[in-house]
Length: 219
Picture 1 (cartoon, rainbow, N blue to C red):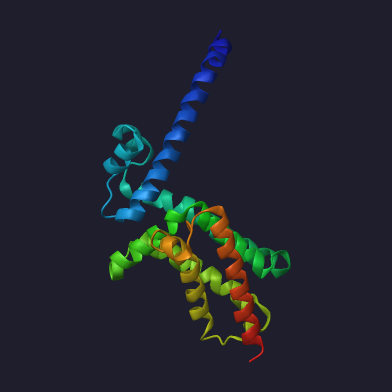
Picture 2 (cartoon, helix red, strand yellow):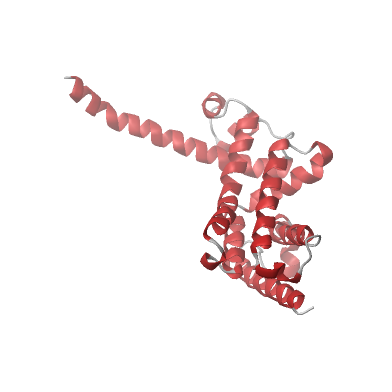
């Protein structure tokens, strides 16, 4: 009797679980966009609930505080890039080429372009009071980028003092493309976020990296 009752409840439990996952994903999608447009301070949990068409109490069940939602947005958007760099460091450069790293970085940013806008918004609006969650992610990404370059034989001809600037410059090139996309569609003559345009930018980044790296090795 008990077993039959449990079996009868199983579909209902799975349905509730599926609805919960859908609610979380919808909330994260909307929150990512709103945080990118308004920043952490300018976005409330109720704003996210209203825009996502979710009852506020339901959202509070998953994210009891705005900080929890913000952290989940950053985690989902930036974790893939951090894991990619960590994998490179663990497996060694034989597992990845420079071109593959560039392609993977562009693909990750293209999947969630609002993440780049969110980072830029928070950095510009926050200044010295920049949200500590964002600061932590930026420092983690920068640190992994430095480790990747330091593992490159000969450092590509760049001095130890120049490597941080190189990481910074390419971080701005990668994220800047996506955060500035709304303003530069007319300049490029196409929507910068289409698959075709991102592919063109990825190819450009590969060639730019190859030129910078090869030229520095010949100095």
